[in-house]
Image (cartoon, rainbow, N blue to C red; front, side, top):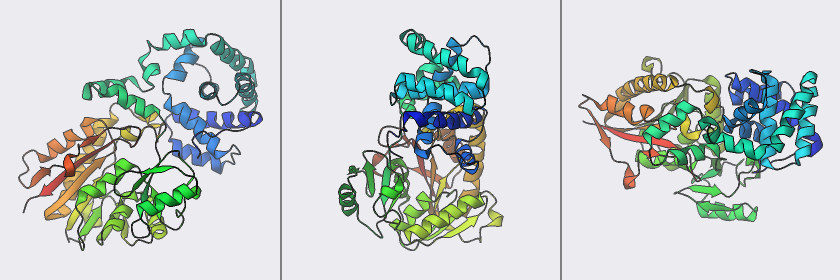
Length: 430
């Protein structure tokens, strides 16, 4: 996907109607990725890049578009599909990629494609009124915390309490477009040579970390030289830190306990000659791990299993290193998955923390004395991070928390160059 995908104005109605269907379902609690796949299965003809842009851009603006529609509509609760169409149209208006009259006209046309013909006049009037009263509406939005920061109020409150000096910066990062970072496969290529290949393909990039290359602008993977041949993978720079913290040595037995889609597993195998076992609870996601290994020319054992049910997959031989990249709220990568803002609820966080504690307990049993376990989340909520680790370490004589290499912070907040992650390195005493 390009950084600024667009379509001819005459095709915008098709994109808006398809995006509205997806956004309405996400607002009702469905997964964005699942709804994107559903759209394809149902024969959606809207250009994929433009559809991703409108759906993701609309969903990132949690609270803003809803507040605008509420302020301009006399209805207490309108038709869910028409509301979603209005949210999408407001995003396109804000993007500035089309003339205003074109967006309004195409939104009205989209009503017909959605079989919402009676709503045409309402959509036309509301969008035109927004354009007339835009400055006044924008000023009023400053008093609506969800509209201003484009996150749920409970999420804003949690970040304000956890990061008094940085909460606004974290929220701003969550509203932006994510960076695109590559990981060079050192078994097939070298970072500097790959940087030159990118330049030859007119793709600007810079070195970031031992094997990372940060692209100036996101591009489809088929534009990346060497991607199909396994020379590079797409992986956030923050996620690439995990392998640096594991202190891998040749011949070690290594477990990636929540491995799909396989980025960190592949990075482990690209870094050291180890015996890797990759687990995941989802069979389809296990196949993605195997596909990634095949593309990259790597060999590892992939098992479809719940890491907590050790009796179902563990042969009793301990692991020297365990990577526990546990399921979490994904609050540190919300800009990549903007549906998270819509589907997460406050009580999801303690539920994730309870599951994370179960995973830690199970994985600690398969770690050899003298071994190390790296606990990872892509969350910025302390309840899933330090709180889980502190509870685990309490009254446990065989566990020690180690400093991360080079004095790296445990909590890596999202910013322009990387997503948000938490790391805790634990050693099992002999």
